[in-house]
Image (cartoon, rainbow, N blue to C red; front, side, top):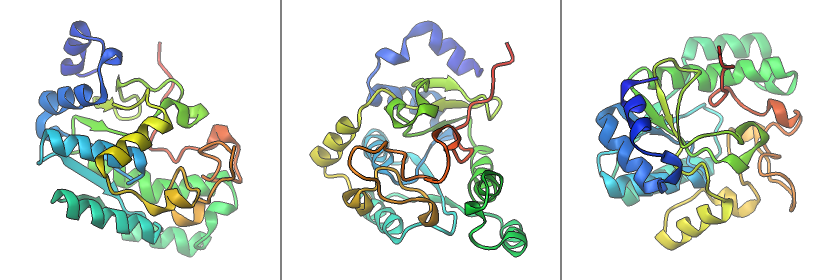
Length: 241
């Protein structure tokens, strides 16, 4: 746990703070060493709007896997245009991607969980690790009600998967309705796939629309069990205690 976080935990309860208060604390505590990891879903564009209002120089990075929907690129450009910000974009390493595709084909992720995680590892996890190597803390749009794998997410927590980093989840306690109320009230650009039944948006081959009443993560890796539906970006490591 970082000294900044340890000291802050002695002073305040992050659970009692609003999303804006958590963001303001994190940006003051970590300055240029904190950034939002954005996939440009509804939660992330909410956080971008909040962060830019707090600091127009706020850092936002994204992982371009090479397999994103066109609508995702569209909202990235809309966000850049509205807020006048620069986005830090991290791509998969070309040599690793080429080797994976030569050995397994373009659609390997449908064949097994192991191959799907291999693809996520090369296209998402390794680029994330490069992005995080520049930071002391990172911000995400994780919410507890999104999935069974996220019910214990805290607003501010040590990142068990990235030693020494702090993970900040300002809207962990928000509902989906609260997210959309903020988007509409503040005129925030959003991914138009949300209007087509996509509550969660990732790579195009691994994301589909969901039917009314289905879980919000049902459209992600729909051929897998809910307990395995993480790409490796937000998996907590077991406690050593």
